[in-house]
Length: 282
Image: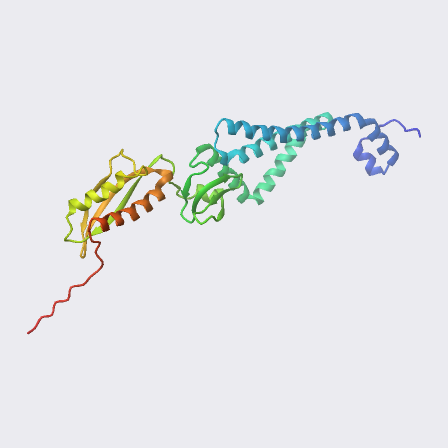
């Protein structure tokens, strides 16, 4: 079969329904079409491979694991976009026009997807400012939990009862964030009640002895026990201890249990609510 010389562009050939011309055009452009397809295929494969290698490099550098997925996705998408532009250039397509059209489409889509754009912008803000890291226990008002992963649109938290919570990034950046693991040490204040008949110094020593027996309570700053209040039915002692942020709850439960056992052993009574009734005879 003999094909006539190609003199029309592809759009005109389709408009004229010139199928012989379309076939001739495709055959004449076959080498650069194959080259463009090869660029896209190789580019996409390379982008995914570089994304995986990037994650490995981030792990070796000790970068916060929660943002690995975020960085990998962003880098992979940018690389794929670059390869697509390269393929379009190979096909002699005006890339500037393509970018202008794409920008207009993005603006139009952005008007209808303002919420998604806000989530992405908030994700970038979290990534840049680092208000928390993977493994940190945070409280954002409506929910609290350990940070598992920071994604482009949302952050994954794991609550104390092992429930996974998906929180939109914009909700996080618009809220007050309490990061309980931002510092290595945390102060713990605990109240212990003793009866008015108790020797306060004896009770103080009992609490401090319990604190000295465990490595959970740090020796610096030094643990302290003082009288907090003389309540209606008891004397309230306050214990001020410092512990590692990761050991907070273990330290709390240890002190609660072992102070009670120490009080029992030393005969220190823990009072309960009581009411004195006075009967007046006229």
